Image (tube, rainbow, N blue to C red; front, side):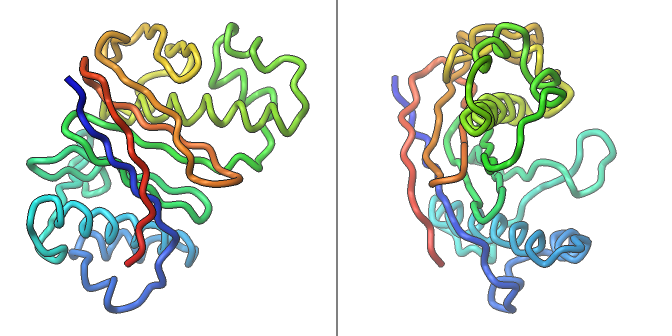
Length: 223
């Protein structure tokens, strides 16, 4: 069996009333809590993108789509957003905001690749086998390859809903494939992983927790 996973890419929307009107009270609070204007725009875009795409999928107007973002640990509304009847994941970095939608637990991660990947960050995120794959690469190529590893691992952790409770080094990758994980939340037999193409200067990956094969499609979203 093959299941579909649609990934949508968007650019940051302006903080305009027509978009802000789609946020509920808790989302307005989170939006205002960001100090930087660009961070507010990224958060807003993620919610508008998700409510619009998921509303179309469910046959509902975006203003009727309400997420449950209750944190499993503290009960506050800053957890991973959920919606009955669909599995989705939101991620953003720089001027890329992404949404992955499918029928099984899913995690999406996008990162800018123009940052420096210093040795302390590499040793924190990658195990010895993975670190060896970066040895000898020029600095720019090393950073690009590192952030591809990073997005794959982040996508996997997001798909479980446990995030950084799963240590990065507990995950061993073989390219865009989960080879092994010491945490029982991730089983290679039940995990599908794919690299994405968010555009120049970015790396991204999506993970779906399923035994089925996954067909990933990428789309550009404009309001």
